[in-house]
Image (cartoon, rainbow, N blue to C red; front, side, top):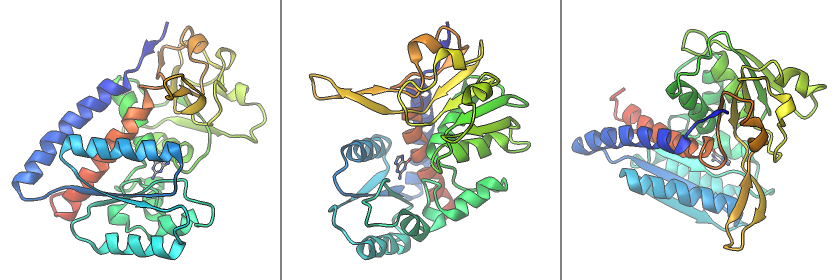
Length: 293
Ligand code: GUN
């Protein structure tokens, strides 16, 4: 039976470390501030942003929220980003994705000042990650690396297979694990919806990262004995009588748990780490802007 990686506990450890750093900053009259921008009424996005704001409050990070109507124009959104870019009291800017279809996501992401890019989504952050330079790393991939590190899971020379090639998870996590001399140094394969025989790849994986967005896509026959399985999926498969969404990961958890050495549950695995790393990036932004690091 697999050891279950507790993302809630690890995220709490990180948040406790951050609390101490935030207190030190406060003593120097530096009040860390994150601006969150949410356009429209997507229920999942509302719930994610609410949770981000709650975490800010718990840690003593000032949260400035901008909830915009679904029909907000791209020009108005870009104007808001421009004003947040030049507002010295704002350390980090987060524009929740997806955006309504009349708004070009790339244009909006490109408009965020790279020094405030706590999501790590801008071309500047992406480029820095690719060539191993210091910068903001996207939160979910950064959270996965922390989970591996804090559970003493070796990645050096390991066969890692990432299923999913999104800009938010698949590509950045692959690049992080590929990095030279920073404790990663894995051999990385990325599979995606057009890959020919995904199972042939996944069966080689010492570490399998599932970020496809399809409930229970990874079945036990696709997993090598004693593999480490990281499940990034958050699929809403129904609604409980209480009104709460029923979630399933990208991995068939019950069956894969019998075969893996480590596994992340959904919920309670990667999810809480994403928010902890957002908080960490926001504190880092404040420290950089204050010339402290
Ligand atoms: N939508 C889904 N995940 C994310 C994320 O990590 N950041 C933002 N801004 N939007 C998202």
